[in-house]
Amino acid sequence: MSSTRQLHLGAFMRPASIHTGAWRYPGAYPDANFNIAHLRRFAQTLERAKFDAFFMADHMAVLNMPIDALKRSHTVTSFEPFTLLSALSQVTERIGLVATGSTTFDAPYHVARRFASLDHLSGGRAGWNIVTTSNPDAALNFGLEEHVEHDERYHRAREFYDVVTGLWDSWADDAFVRDVDEGVYFDPAKMHVLNHKGEHLSVRGPLNIARPIQGWPVIVQAGASEAGRQLAAETAEAVFTAQSDLAAGRQFYADVKGRMEKLGRSPDHMKILPACLVVVGETVEEARAKRAKLDSLVHYANAIGSLSIALGHDASKFNPDEPLPEIPETNASKSGRQRAIDLARRENLTVRQLAQRLGGYAGLAMVGTPVTIADEMEAWLDGGGCDGFTVMFPYLPMGLDDFVNLVVPELQRRGLFRREYEGATLRENLGLPRPRNRFFQS
Image 1 (cartoon, rainbow, N blue to C red):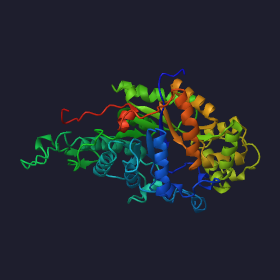
Image 2: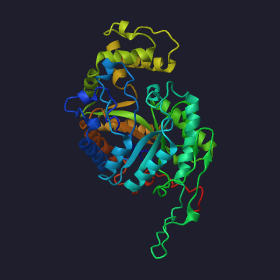
Image 3: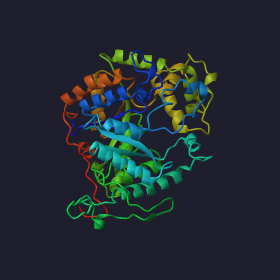
Image 4: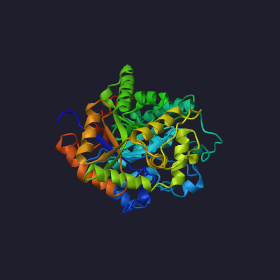
């Protein structure tokens, strides 16, 4: 083996598969996203494979697409993240449990309390994915007629982080003496009242729960904009990111970790984990056939809508069975347009095939045998593109089982992935330090 490091692996599990056609794949569980028995089985399978974390995204709007597309979506119903992860904490022992918590549509006291509770319930396995919630439809569910402006959301998020982490530090680790003889439950000298009054938030404190087992739950962040990268550099300990290829991954990795160093943070104290859809076959041809079958299950009405958004043009007017025509620039997203064009040219896709790809999943994908997939993952790790991956499964349960039973052993054989967990907490398994309490000496 050429690498001196090991991969960290998280599993993106909400929705249970990000691919639009996943619930229709032959043999898949159509209700995988909203069936506790299935989700319990997935979490336990991931834990047996020694995955670092079970990662739940969250969506707070249903009416965010035309109803003809919406009625075909398997993401319209799902469990609230804290409720589900609290349940899963009782049927697992080592795997991390990461949930999204919005800094735009929630209150810091609520977020701090919920994550501290999850950390105690799980024995120190909680992680907070900080999001500002980009979907404008979510604003309509929280009393707003328009979404909060992008930069303002990130300014609020930065203050929100300071408040939440300050609340986690409300108590010294040894504050709760519980002296039965003297009748003293806690030492008041080891309680801190935050009294935060800032531009966006006013929070008195203290938090009404002991300091989390990990000190703080692991801080995860997913923004890719300039503001998002800066927030990650300042706060994140794990980054969930979408990168199309190794060159893009290498640039993102160097940028964010470089920002960390300028801020005086050790780059080792952040794990960058690009999202990757993995389709496994006994041969490369079999894996490609599985991916093609999966993409074919995306309804064309949904797919062509996704392509139109990406290109900034009405793609329904194109011949679906011919190559993509020349696409002039518009005021729509230039990067989204270029990614779609590049994908079509690189893989010689017809309009229909491109639409189905974008309508299903168009990001980084590894489609091949356990050996070729391990080769690609090792190349990313050695090439400075990642510290591991956030794995997305094409359909459940087979896609997960294929990865666990076939790819993980190949990674272990090469020394690229653990055979046993390093510790009991998510921080220990990610190799992250326990934060010092800013108000009390440990």
